[in-house]
Amino acid sequence: MCAERVQRIVQAILLGFIMGLAGLGMAGDTLMLQLAFIMMFAMMIMLLIAGFTGFCPGLMVLKKIFHPCKCEENNEKDNN
Image (cartoon, rainbow, N blue to C red; front, side, top):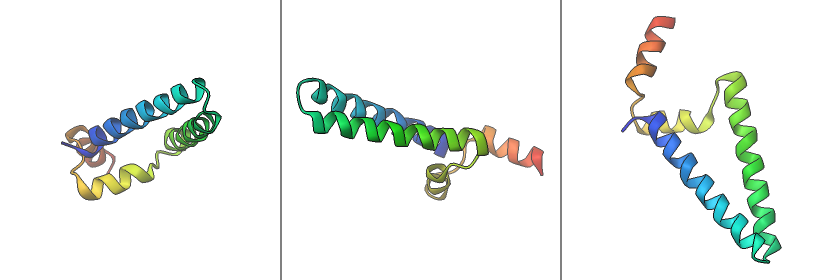
């Protein structure tokens, strides 16, 4: 499995976790709703930074553990 796919899987898991926290918050636990809001806001900021600058710290760490996807390797070779 390549780093970009692992990143997308981790993002999906985080979004599911945030949805669960929001659901608990709607059931009456306001702390969980606040925590869900803060986590979602942090994720949005990181995605915006990655989108505008192309720098993603999570992906940099994952590339040290997993190999990059083939399409990513081809794009890097074409740019050099």
